[in-house]
Length: 160
Image (cartoon, rainbow, N blue to C red; front, side, top):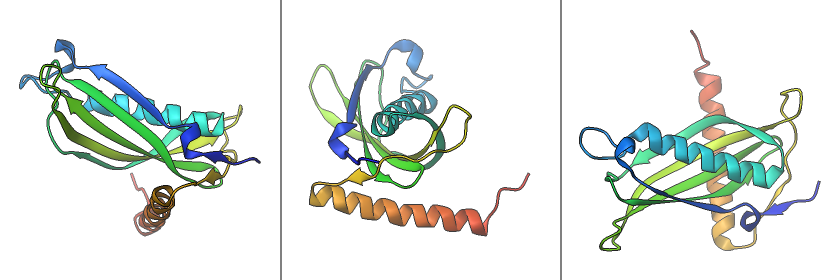
């Protein structure tokens, strides 16, 4: 299977925060931002593997600063790691005041997607071709996060 570069699937989405997107404090609902993050992460994963994907996990989601009504939200996502059937996608969110142009770092998240075939079974994804030192570093850190995720699942299996 031919590998794909990070730049082949890197994607940016821009949204405006409207009144129906905010809570009683005038800030963006966390769930709305999570929806946008997951939607864009899924697009990046599908662009990398050219298959249907499902969200397997959201490792880390940190809300650093509030996003206010009327702000412009810039969501950037790229692939950090491709395993046999799964991919880690990093998503970074910046908010911009449309009147002043001031930009604020607002959120960062790491999501894992799994490629699936027509029968809903996991299937292989193309390897990731890294071209820069930054991409190599991101891939190494993603491998470490993957090991922690897998270790945690072994140590704390899901029980209902």
